[in-house]
Image (cartoon, rainbow, N blue to C red; front, side):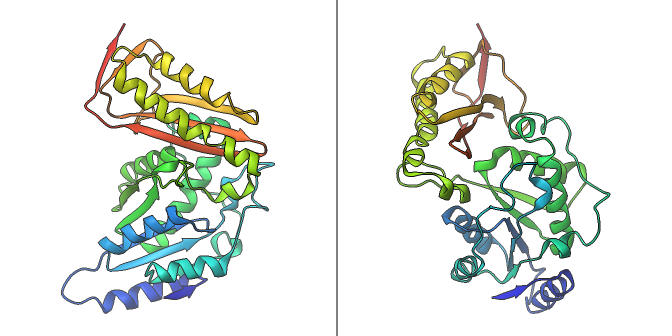
Length: 298
C-alpha cells in the first residue's frame, strides 16, 4: 500500500500501476471518504477490491461541505488507524491531501445539482451538496476511476452524484453499497462517537421506526404515506433526546415527494429517509422499499 499526499504523485502512482496490469485495460476503483473509518467504509473497500485491478481510497475532511456552526473542526480524525484498516482491506493507494492541496486558491467554480438537492439534508444544510459534488468531481478528475463506491446510508448523496455523472457525461459507474449496521441496528457512522451512552441507546429509535414502517407496508395493504410517516414520528418521539429534522417518504433516485394520501402497496423505488438529532449529534438513516411498485390513490 502506498500513501500519497499530492495530486502529481497520485496520478504518477496510478499510471505506474496501470502499466503493471497485463492483458487487459485495468479497472480503477475509488472509495472517497472523510476518514475515521469503520466497518461501513471497509465494506466499500472490499467491494472495490473484488471488482477492480487498482483501488484508491481517499481520506479528506472537506471544508466546503460543512456549514457555519457544523463540526468541521471537531470531526473525528485518526490517520494511523485509518491506514491500518486500509492496509488490511488491500487498498493500493491511499490519498490523504491537505486543504491546501485540494484548494490551493479560492474556489470560483462549484458544481450544483438542482432539484434533488433541495430536499432532505439539502434543505437542512444549504450548500452542503454543492461542496460534496465539487470535491467528488475534483477527486474524479484526479483519479479518473472506472467505478466509485458510496454507502446507501447517505442515499441522497448517491442520488446526487449519480445525477452529476449522468448530466456531465462522466465515464464513471457510481456503485451504491448497502448500509452496514451495528448488531443492535444502529447504522454505522463516524459521528456515532459523539453520542453519550443515553443518546446511543435512544438513537436505536431510528432503525426501530424503519422496521415498523417496513412491517406496516408489508402487513397493511392500504397503508398510506401519511400513516407510515406518523408511525415513524411517533416511534422516534418516544426517545427523550430526539429532535426530528425530517421524516420523508420519496421516490428514489428522483427524490420526488409522495402525497400523504397515496397508498404504498408492494412498493419499489421508494425511500423512507430520516434525520434526527440526539443531543448535539445529527444522525441520518433510511430504508429503501424493494418490491414491485404499485402506487394507488385513495
